[in-house]
Length: 118
Image 1 (spheres, rainbow, N blue to C red):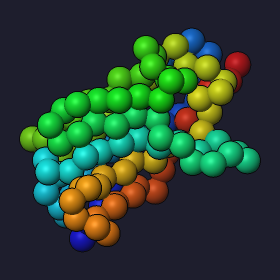
Image 2 (cartoon, rainbow, N blue to C red):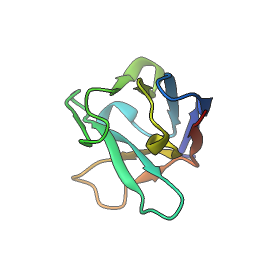
Image 3 (spheres, rainbow, N blue to C red):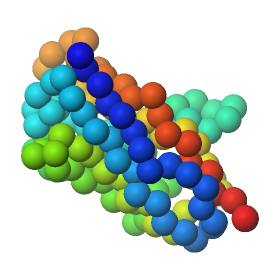
């Protein structure tokens, strides 16, 4: 069975750091593009960062310079290092995997809560 399990969320103060992990199983992880999305209360789910199967990365402007996405294909895991956190980063963070050339291959995790507050 396909499974994406996020971990590492929690409560952190503004300016602090957190590292999220997403452990994947049940599919050829190395062939998939991976991404992190987030959804804050009352807002639409938005793309935070992506990393392609080849290792190319891209970020939302709001997190550029603060967040870093990476992957370890040997561990079937994608990470999101979050630094200089702001209250606006508070959201449920979701891991997603997909393969552009194969329709219907989108996989989602259940999410992990990140709360940035004093």
